[in-house]
Length: 504
Image 1: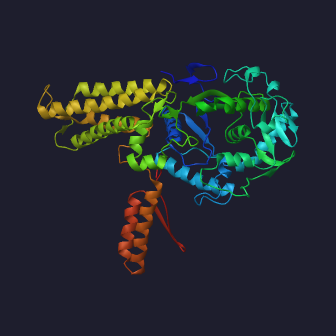
Image 2 (image 1 turned 120 degrees about the vertical axis):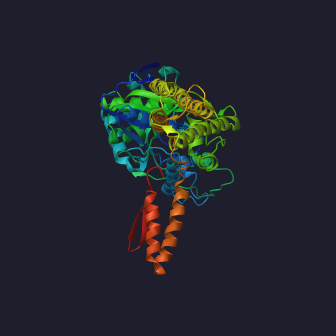
Image 3 (image 1 turned 180 degrees about the vertical axis):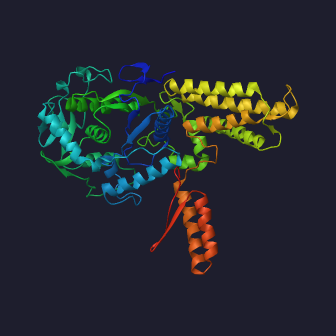
């Protein structure tokens, strides 16, 4: 079965055909780093990660790019809070580090690159200049706006008519724009103090000297890039003028993604993305989980409490384009499903390593159910990345394992020995297909990079004391034990450094 995806652009589920039959260009609208990442962000991250893994499983080379928005009034509003830093860039750096730590803790594959807006201002300015030269944008009082009436297909993603679209942007832009629906590509001056005030946390007082954001010189003014132009510049810089898949949250369809299409296609005369996939929102108490509403559970809190495997089981219990509710009950269900998977896997391993495992035993029912589960998993994932049904296929393998083990232990159905080859196939299938969902059966993937780093630092400190005491043999043993865990240790003149294994 060919992979089919639901394309927001066409409103249909259609066969996926990348421009290059061997490569997929995948772009995901990443996080504005102004708050700790929460489970709403994690849900999209995990589903994009599963898309990446399944596409690789199908044999594609996936070029996955995900940005960090590190230029935003919400970031400026955090300046001076909780020791985050005294500048927009310092706050952004602090939250980027937290975000990367959370990504690793969730066992996400690394993207090819994580571009930042602040690194791509020259590309943004070049793109704005192109739009002005081609007649799609205009300068007004040092700012630059995209003329939506100049792009005939404006509204094709969100299915809105131009005359029905309300004004975009801040109220103070209205006198500068030709059309209320025009949107900013470049804003003259620094960040709006009123916007900073709007987004500051309760109890934080910036006094009479509100923090200022970064600005850059441009042909029209010293100022800041508009939000929408940033993703177009970054995706085209690191991928191509046409993407195979563009993923983002459902709440970004309009105006963000609609504006991305308009400015990108106006500049290049090429279709910007062939497939638009949108993740549905994560709900808590009937509202979407969001930083602005304050109704969120951070990724760090969730991983610390439940671990990566339970969280990934929970987050993939529903497909990317279905709504999901966070509650104690839904988390408990995920814990139960993961426990069932883990118990089945461990029971199969124990049976494999026992004398009762026979090279001649052949449980046709076990082997048939495993192959049936593989087919069901493949069918589910090719059906628009249906992780819910894919999970069910994995669970059916553990049911088959348990049925086989019970039959042998109770002497039923004429089965006297464990089917070694069948159980090995079951274990390999759980590892392989579970890996597509980012589950780790070979050890709990808490993925806590911070905790792992603390432990390694502690071991290296003990090792250094052993060396100072002349106990070189014991110091070497500690190094060997770390390297056996995949942790590379290198001694330098300034002390020992290390690198954690992938996924940590």
